[in-house]
Image (cartoon, rainbow, N blue to C red):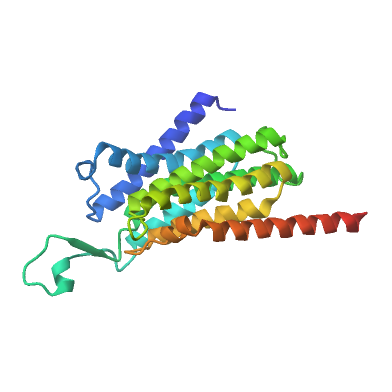
Length: 281
């Protein structure tokens, strides 16, 4: 069994190789994503995100034999590279071509491309989705004995205190990543009410993750966290092919819709479980 240090080094190496591959393809296609294009913070967020999004699934696979995050990473990266490298390929145009201006503007519009760039910008969101996938796999594999065992972590259900702490931390991670991503995309509320919108969204995004995680870790209700995972991954996937209007604004502003769907699904699962137990009796 490899030591913790070996697993960490292997995970970091996988993350660096993943980042190098995506950046190589993007630079080869002519995208302006070199270090000179960004501030130190912007470069760290983009390049570091490409490292972390691959290092985390690799660590989960080596540490706990969780395979779904790594499989999802391989599929996602392959999908992005397939979009970039298959015809018609990206084409670059000056904005003047579309506006029928006599002089070039210097503003470049890319058609049929930027998938790798969007993936790089969205890497932190993908990381959250892969973490949720790993959590679900762990919960499922510890629930059913027929599935292969995973390395020992605390078994579900957790005590109420530990479940609350776990859900609170998970909610904070989800809210921080999604709000940061919204800020980078320029998601705002018309009328200059950002000072209301972002606190409202922060509380909502925390609840959107914390409640499903609590129901999973305390009561082993799988449906809410399964839907949360799907929401996060679908949000990230939609951003890969978006152009101007970001679907992430709906996720941030309409969090109560997604939370309602997750809680209803949890209620249905709980009801079905109660009926099954009564039937078995």
